[in-house]
Amino acid sequence: MTQPDPQTCEVKIKGKWRPVSLDKAVSRYAVVMKRCPACHGPVSINGAYSGPTFGKTMTHRRAHSGCPLKPDTYSGTFSPHPLALT
Image 1 (cartoon, rainbow, N blue to C red):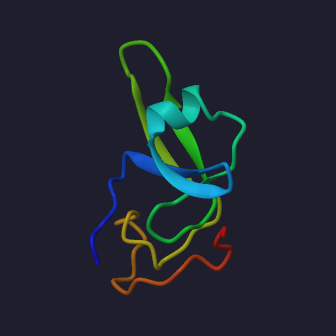
Image 2 (cartoon, helix red, strand yellow):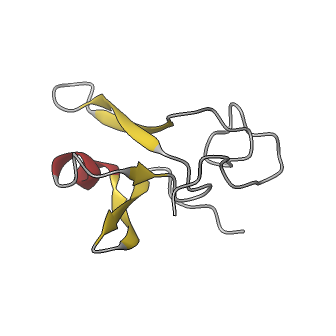
């Protein structure tokens, strides 16, 4: 399985899930539901949006051990998120 870029998430645009950068997700799609490109679980975008500590991260709204984009909790076996968005 090809691992998605951790600096992207997916947003639903005109009925289709499309990958976008975290920067674009925050600036252009702030009120749109976002999902993880790997396990399809709901995510939020956290981090500094300006200033010297600029940087964003994607955080699953509910922890999931089957997502390879979360190395600190990944079990080693991929599985779809139990609350996967379709």
